[in-house]
Length: 302
Image (tube, rainbow, N blue to C red):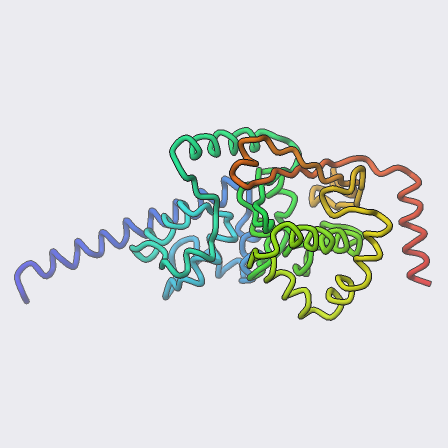
């Protein structure tokens, strides 16, 4: 035996165990911070609870970049947290070409970074779901109430509510579970897409959403025919349809079915960064709207 080999092997084994313990504490701590059970995270990842338990304990045969990015998405990690995840799991930072898949707001200077940090703390204190988006509706910041609202949404490769709100509403199969009377939400989102493209026609992210709409026959027909007719009547898009109340079902049974008004309230400091803050204001549904909804369901059932 080469002198020192046993000691070297023991040292490497100890280092590997320390990394595994840090990874376990990091993943578990993030999950508990979000108030999620192992079953909830497993649902987001579309894997079994047992398999996720192995992920959390670091018992994975091979950590691929795809697995790590999926885990970061399921646990709503920031870019910094994602880098930590990679460091603990595979001993390196995310690959540069893949890091772009996990876009977050990047501070341009320390003052901006401090402002965004303080703004995030303020948003976390709000009881209503609130989130910050860029011009393509990528979600750059979201509070606990927003995450709680969508906590039962399963993992999806391109349409998570923590990634892009328009993509979620248009393409995620679980969207109707939260966004009740989904067709109205979709029409408003398609109008928002058209409105955003009018202002930012060279934005490749918005163009990609429109391209995916065209690949979906039902959404394509709605975008080309139903949405323009709807706009003629309502005269506005998702954000700027003043007073529009749509229906939303909260996963908390004590909240349940509510009306929802999307309110924009963006301070100048966020606007200067090209960001917009939106809040989902929950309102009680009146008896008339409930009756109309019931009658609509009866009509469709007939």
